[in-house]
Length: 384
Image (tube, rainbow, N blue to C red; front, top):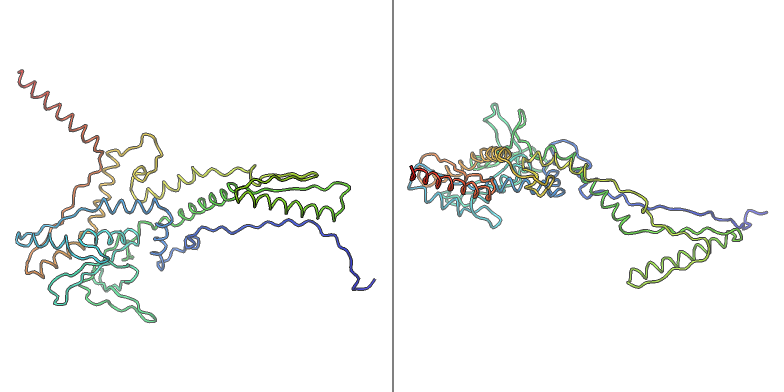
């Protein structure tokens, strides 16, 4: 035999399995490292990935709203009210409430709010009050905690102080000792959010594999069939099966007929999908607890008799009151500057609307009971 003699080699059957990696779309959560750089983008990804977290923050912002400012001089009150109602806040918005909404959104998400008071060319009027991305500014601390400068890092150089520091607004949210930047409300969520997204991604992959049915066609050759006959029969069955499936996708019905020992099974039909209700609920409980919002206000019906109790209302009210206190210094600076620019002196007092979290039906029922009690009392006094 020569080296170039052709030999007939019998090819063995080959089974190939193809599977995509199937990663969840928010890859930043997979490679999360608890460092300061890039945290804002990470927290925004959490809000985008988990709708309940985004809804909870927006509910806190809505509940915090409703503010008015009173000054000691009556002559300035009308102008101050008009200013707060009509001041430009950028992006086609007007009114101090729209500024506070964006400012508070940055505080809760990034841990700090950054804003700027913009004066007109004559520097006699406040033309706009704008909020900005907190990642644009860095803090350079001085000898005391009261001495700090907001800076901006230029490309390839050290951070440079921003101009007009007296017109800049900066508010950290729940700052810690040695950390002047504040703490995001979402700081403790990346780890749990990553697990939650893995569960949702696995659910999607399982439904893609088991909901969109795959078939396994097994042909067992007989004793009289040779290797070549088995390969030819397998190829023929594969062609006909593919044609039948293609015809089904086009809306027509095509039968599949085979001769021999042919077995057709549904891939994944005998597998059980893991129950995700308990782990998903446990994770959501942790995420919602950080926001302070009662679960049923976010559409989570974990109990058939769940409703807001007076204790829950008091706790949520205290949470919103604390958030309001953190916004008051920035609002007072804006109003006091407006008074000075218009020749008025004196301080201002920030007044917030009452937080109403009780059920209107219960309030109406309580009012009815009070009216009935007054009516019975009057009847009793008349008879006496």
